[in-house]
Image 1 (spheres, rainbow, N blue to C red):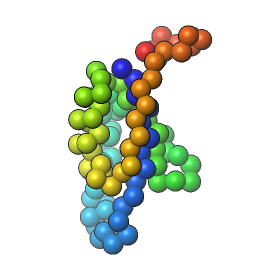
Image 2 (image 1 turned 180 degrees about the vertical axis):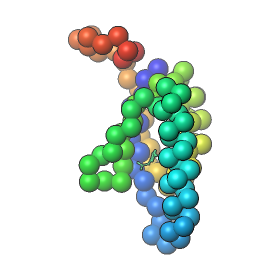
Image 3 (image 1 turned 90 degrees about the vertical axis):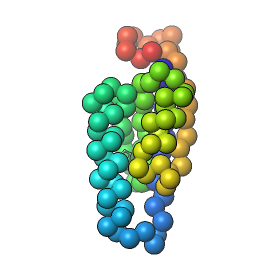
Length: 96
Ligand SMILES: O=C(O)CC1=CCC(=O)O1
């Protein structure tokens, strides 16, 4: 199943820079591993915001929930999830 996930990161202003840097580095490693696995299909920065829009390809909502809640930045993110289904006009085979 495909899901569109919008994540907005809100790090506390008083978080020590070293801790923020460590969280971001770990987040990057986890995100890149999930992209290599094919589960995190797209990762786009929202221009001008500390936010991203992503497409996940997972077995269902339970797997997506497990992946998202395991992200190092999860405690500091607002997350919105939308389930996607095939558009009847799409010419692509890989969007289901
Ligand atoms: O910077 C972000 O949008 C948060 C994030 C998600 C995956 C990643 O590497 O950073």
